[in-house]
Length: 393
Image (cartoon, rainbow, N blue to C red; front, side, top):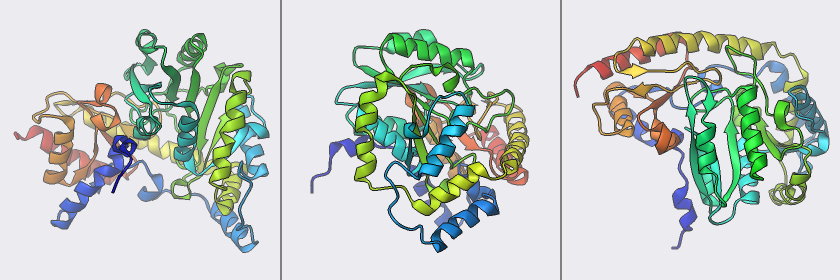
């Protein structure tokens, strides 16, 4: 039977590689999973008041179809959070979604037509390219200095064409941990305005920063056509609950998009209502668990980066945010980073993700690992990686 050719462009290396791990596991080898950025799978949990809010919503009968745009109280709380970060949004500027992935799909389906180009920071989170391709567009990577956390503005300029419709920013970045400064954000926003482009900014890791204060896109947005993507999976430890949102900067340039994109929310009916009550509680309730989570991650980040940089043949820039390390393979004995990762898996049971899965132009020659596991697990995994790298093929 016929299958749409658009689906052929959909890739998600982070989960695709798990199939290979399961085959190795069936052969009796224990797998150390360092592939997926899910805090909950590594022992972190949302606090009891957040869980209780969902249970209360269910028991209180709040199990019906919610408003397609989202629970008004939640949208108001989200707007207040984003106001505090500098984005001048109100309740009517917020649309609640089933995770950031749905938000991204809605945005791309609303702005991308056949042959349109979307600029992505290389390396990038895989669904960005997949959703661009799914809607007939072409993802175009621009260079980012991983050591200095700065986009190459000249490279961005050189890649803007008459077909470019948007610039995407992911800060803090998955897979690199890059966090853009206010100056970098302003340079990118100014460039987008000069060429009449949408600015799509993903801030899902906004509170997971280690060395410097986070600057949100709202601080430099002014009246620019900024579309913010955010959610509760990472900072609020609600990954499996699938809840996110879109924030529309109050710009006249977004009026048409704001009229039409919500049709997609109405078509899919609504976001899970009990989860929306839990998300509301996660914003209104005590926030100490977030700072504890970030403090613990910093210890793990420091341990992992120092350890990787002590291994001959590997080097790793210091991630300023999120919970990923993105080492470079300096002397690869294998034909590609994908072959390196597969050999590492088969020989040691340590599962990472090949860097080319985050874009071949700037991701190749690297691999990504999460530093969410406890220090003992990380130490074991890095010992295995060191033995693997130092042993002739």
